[in-house]
Length: 41
Image 1 (spheres, rainbow, N blue to C red):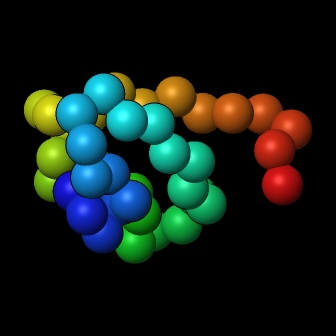
Image 2 (cartoon, rainbow, N blue to C red; image 1 turned 180 degrees about the vertical axis):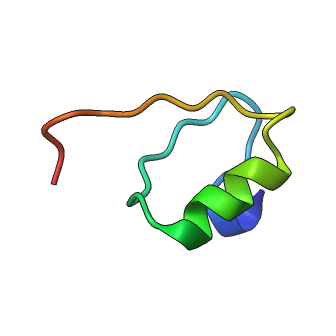
């Protein structure tokens, strides 16, 4: 969770979309909610 930048309960972070981040999200998918943002750079 810390590798994704999440340190506290109910925290939000924005991460780049890449295979490493997707793999980390897959491992903790039962603990997090993921939304894709459009138009972000």
